[in-house]
Picture 1 (cartoon, one colour):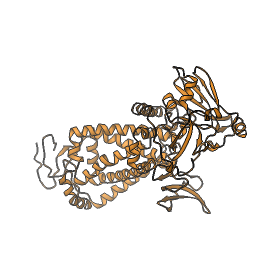
Picture 2 (picture 1 turned 60 degrees about the vertical axis):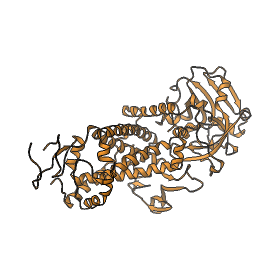
Picture 3 (picture 1 turned 90 degrees about the horizontal axis):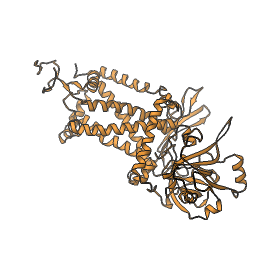
Picture 4 (picture 1 turned 180 degrees about the horizontal axis):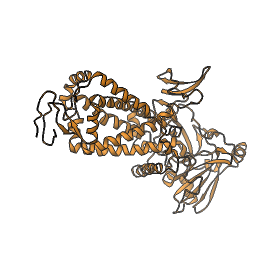
Length: 282
Length: 262
């Protein structure tokens, strides 16, 4: 064993940080969320409007978002209306593609599966990956409870809450620590995803099912109606996309090779000065 | 170097990650739209799983939510066929549906048929329910009609029957090789469900043509495409493959799931 205690410039120990359960469920989720997002946008395109309440207002207005197209003197324009405020979103939302061959879908074909309008296929793929997503989540919860990933890395402790201001300051300076367990902000982010966003997007998805509505009408009341549930489903999607962007940015910022290695092989190079324990490699 | 990163590296990495996001969109997965694609057929099994799990978890008699009259805030939004142009239907409409008859046939003890007056004189059920279109929108309306279960009992469903096939008048799609008529099907759980009615009334009025006059079936625990309009014949069968393209309904033949409860 070499002594790697605290020579300046020396490397921290190589630690076995991610169990096989964490790694496999991570990549299965990555695939699931990719397909769920792109087929979800396909499904949204079938009726690109969101409402508050039980039903969709056609003769009254309870919509909070709608995406559409209209004709102007300069040709077709895309228009997105949020809380009554309209924005010209030509090229991205409502109308996209070239001027010769414009495409009149809410979200452009580049971000939907299939790339053309096909609600039936979007639903087939969406529900397949929804089942896979939920099954993976159950496996992850059980495994993470047993192997300690939950209490070590995910559920914040009182000390973590107290350490948040300092962790925010460290992140602002891009001074990222690579410890044996997750840092306070990391815990908070993953706790939010696993205990708030994932359950919420599954529950609101189920609340859109007329069959589930019959079995569990309390879910309609919990979310304030089927159309509100659909709106929340969409908002949680936006939050998960936001999480994904921050996640990837942080992986890049923290050292993409080391981070990717830990999520593929499980082995992670900790910061210099991290105390070694049995099982570590130099 | 593992712990520290420079601002330049950070910005460069962020740009790389961002461009990856833009490249994510694609048409590589369009093959999933092909009905005979094997990967798609595996994925379609998820819908079979949904059907089986929902049937196992949800009681056969469990009702869909019924709303109060104050929640009827608009007319029932019509879509799909709104004014069928087949000669049979046009003729019936001209006669104000006086010659209309609803027929129950197939795997039954006795084929029966009823006029509109006969249906309206049977015990009726009214329910204020939410109609959920597969597109994503919902609309609350009051539906009045004859429970399908009592009609099926009059015909006497044979034990080997597994499905009801619902034949409709409307030419939902017109092709060079002729009209494609709308049809649907359900299992007998949905057919005998207490809220499954042959509706002839909508919001206390006679069911309008746009919403399926003279008879529209309501299956309240399923999406809108499982509620066939312009219904004229109910056929009890043990196999859905002889009808249309064999998937159990017009939209199912186009790749939509048969159960329609999600």
